[in-house]
Image (cartoon, rainbow, N blue to C red; front, side, top):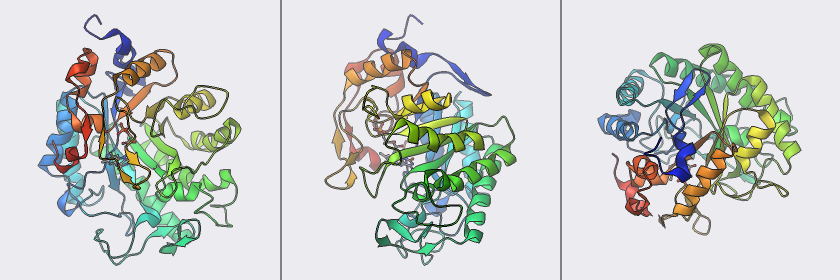
Length: 377
Ligand SMILES: Cc1cc2nc3c(=O)[nH]c(=O)nc-3n(C[C@H](O)[C@H](O)[C@H](O)COP(=O)(O)O)c2cc1C
């Protein structure tokens, strides 16, 4: 490995995670791009992902892609993962990524109460948001509180999406349980006030996610990797927390492990922040320590500002390059805190980010600017 910049050499060790062989530890973070007219990933989307695979990203996690439920989507032009045309589009993406030597997992998504009526989201904009208790955040109502039948329908939609993903050649699936969308609305006491088995204490509030994971596992078999993304923070409240102590985190994670999660994707906005007092471990580090499962860390890798501007309550406009954080990442991975790292904006800004980091060509990295969102590829 003499051609690898030594500070980051751990990022370039191959790894086997069950049947998933990855050539390095770098994951493309899931990023919604709204570039799929008619909810179908088109040739531009194919080229966008193929370009990251060609440039040595070990595992691509796609933008959130909506499962087959009338209220799963909250935005125009996001890709679906049901129906002939979207699945055919995704198959082209998968084949192109494989042709470039990459691996790829779709991020399976339901937005829940983030969906607002008549804001342009397909397939039928008049459908309201669906959520555990009809709340998008504490005290703020939006849409419909889900019945048991609604819950069963959504679980089935995730399971079918995973089965279809496997059939068309994806290498794994990721379940989007983070950032205040539907699954996280079940996790969060602030939006889940149910008194049935899908509500109650923290463990009760994991049941919906566990039922989804177990249903997926039944349909994809024992050897198909299920990645689960979760976060403490919510888009509704950046300071929200599901777990305040390692004990609570352990209680939250164990049911998900038992349901069949293989890899946890621990979403934080700054990977270097410690999760609990008394230890430098971040959320991914704690998750690995408590579950023994492989983990993905994420958050401002190579950049000096998080992707959210908390004052504006919107995406940040720009971030400078921060190469010291890349070296710190390499060290922490070498120390075994986490197995994989997801990189978001840096890979939007520069599709060649991975080979540049690998060779220590830090002077060629560029600052992130939101203009990178205006085009694909
Ligand atoms: C444009 C954009 C779209 C995003 N869309 C999603 C998404 O669909 N699903 C998701 O879980 N996270 C999404 N995120 C969050 C990223 O996956 C990632 O966690 C975040 O950008 C932090 O990584 P970074 O600092 O390397 O950009 C998005 C982020 C950006 C910048």
